[in-house]
Amino acid sequence: MTATILVADDDAAIRTVLNQALSRAGYDVRITSNAATLWRWISAGEGDLVVTDVIMPDENAFDLLPRIKKARPDLPVLVMSAQNTFMTAIKASEKGAYDYLPKPFDLTELIAIIGRALAEPKKKPARLDDDMQDGMPLVGRSAAMQEIYRVLARLMQTDLTLMITGESGTGKELVAKALHDYGKRRNGPFVAINMAAIPRDLIESELFGHEKGAFTGAQNRSTGRFEQAEGGTLFLDEIGDMPMDAQTRLLRVLQQGEYTTVGGRTPIRTDVRIVAATNKDLKHSINQGLFREDLYYRLNVVPLRLPPLRDRAEDIPDLVRHFIQQGEKEGLDSKRFETEALEVMKAYAWPGNVRELENVVRRLMALYPQDVIAREVVEQELRADIADSPITKAGMPTGSMTISQAVEENMRTYFAGFGDALPPSGLYDRVLTEMEYPLILAALTATRGNQIKAADLLGLNRNTLRKKIRELGVSVYRSSRSA
Image 1 (cartoon, rainbow, N blue to C red):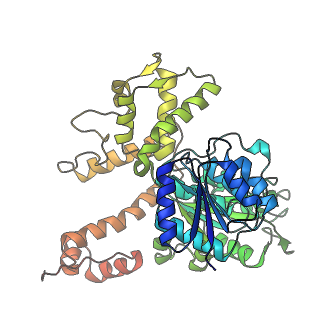
Image 2 (image 1 turned 180 degrees about the vertical axis):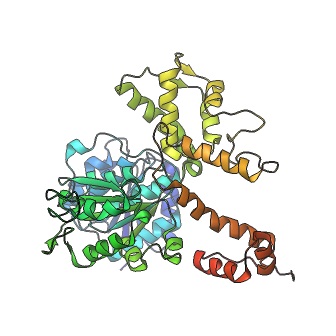
Image 3 (image 1 turned 135 degrees about the horizontal axis):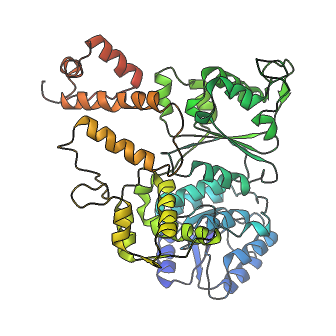
């Protein structure tokens, strides 16, 4: 029996496109421009699936959805919207929509979602409290952010372990907090711990707590972050910096759901959702023997990569407005940015990502008296001299720079991303470790994959180079010509 799709959208062009595409896919299609007609069809028992826009002339789809789910709880509803915000995706999920698609949408993806929905109708998720609809924890309408919103909306009512990856400053903790605040554990605690900010010999005690006398200085029993996060979410930031001993303990928690305190003997059951984050390539760390492969797969149940700001530059005006509003609430003078100033900011590479952008906006609000921020002011703050500025995505011209100058410039922009704060400790070893891979890759590329020439270029023994290639997982470049 052919399934019937009910389509509601006040845009005639979209109705025409959907009617043609869904008809070609073998469905019976009924189209309308308003919510009243859609509700009449649904209440009469018609249709096997609904595709609806959020904003219609007579009623918002989010107001209609509860009535649909009450009258026909097994009817899948696919919501489309041009608003494209995090809260739109969350509202679609909590109101009972099967899925959410931002406009403009991909017809192939739409038809695939409809096929899945008809084969396996989605159960109604738990509602969020009405007072949680205010606020915007995540900002951006770019395609990259839309996919993140959709993934998060699907994860809200689950306890699946999430691994968030992305460069420093992309907002990994903000995403973890949003997942907690709008998820099933929102009434429990949200506890965050940064592995890179804690001395390595104290991480196990910080995570699992310790008994009195467990080690020198342990004068009293101390609760760990797992105990503090009971019933809620534990966010493990910079998980790649966790020592091996602590990794083994964490693996046991994930496998068995229990742990022991440092110096303790009695296993303690735990009910905590784990969200981990890292700016490192953990597969690279696995190859170096610095991270357990079995723990990686336990944590990486749902991977989520946050894009760097340079890959979603179209979100910068929205982010700037958001940071201005935050600054106003904190007593800073309101500012407005000229269009040309925003264009300069969109062209900048932002090595410190969203954190750096926030710092720049706050600095401009605090230090400049004028109400309107001009292009020249932004360029000055970003050290945007025309001759050698990092204001373009291509970065500074490096052809005439020495290695020392290039490293100095890179470290300058790296530190700038932290504003008045400092990066995590262990920077020396971290920089040296992270330089090995691109250095060896560049040498192999320059020598067209000839390992003898690359070893000579690097000043390494050939066997040493082979070992590093294997340990670092370097993809060897091989030329089609003989080297």
